[in-house]
Length: 500
Image (cartoon, helix red, strand yellow):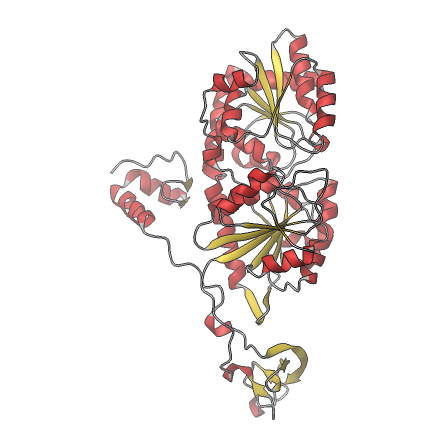
């Protein structure tokens, strides 16, 4: 049997599992162990998780806790308190076998909620679907989850825009996008969104097919969920480390049952008294998105470019991302006699302002490209990608560039410092607010022959550690853990234990 192709311990795409150092060594040196690993990986997926354990299924008559009683058995004199519930059938009941005269024991009731077997159903709450990194994260999870977890819906805020292409991707995965009837006038609005008279109606329709809610970037989402009487697990995710992220996370984080962040820097956006509950869940990229399907030079010609040095920006056009840094670098490179152009790939609400600013800095050297259908084609046409943002969570654009083998320049924000700590430097680093000279110098270093080994290493690390499959597996494992720790409280929903 052929030797394993993995070059280091970690995630193995062939075997679809994490390989410890010992297991990796066995896979490399022993044909017998290699054969057993391959056979285990080739077996069909296990049966989907049972959402609710049979013994914890609630009685359909039991309501909320009304008071507490002390055990009155002779063996328990002065014993523990237990809950007494409102009961539509008996007036009052308990789930404890305690000797309290006239108090029914709910465990003996046969009127149980219906047992549901199947994947854990997830509904996302998002402030938009406009092609940003967090929105791509939602689509990636929806496309990658297979058996034990399934995305069933995405609820959009009243002010939220939606790109038709992104909504269409979700629909192909069986995910319904819900929204109220308040449609913003200054943003894209996909006609495929299922509209309801109010946001509350849309929320209730989505939650009818939900076991877990995951939200990001929505400052009053906890009030929206409370208005729809949601009592199940709610995971709030931090995708950023700026002041805007911090403001939006304060209220939801205190009401949520679980907290997650895509990097250690993003975790600091949560209130200080909530940070001990945060779990770090790093992003992953869809590897097939970064494999080019067109010739590099054909793409360049479609942009009106030839053999110039193309310095690129990939992502949403937002002033907060400092996209003008590419224009500064290009202007300085041209001043040094290098035939360079800047390429801005994407769109956004600030596009007009970004265009005016960049073209004023580097006139005649700016190329504007709409969001591509296949990002790998665009990345393959670039010579360098620059991310000069003053704050980030874990940039998918940067990870996609690493995986595509594109030299990169980035500021030391978001996940960059911790990834460099854990894996060694993956890109050239410039300070936040870097000037034209610093940016141009970094681009020259990144595109130089001396950086080729680091570009190859960044690609290897990204494909091994930050694939969509690995991210989806991490989330599926955690959601399974959340489900197992969920305390079923009533037939209308469940209340999750507040554990990290």
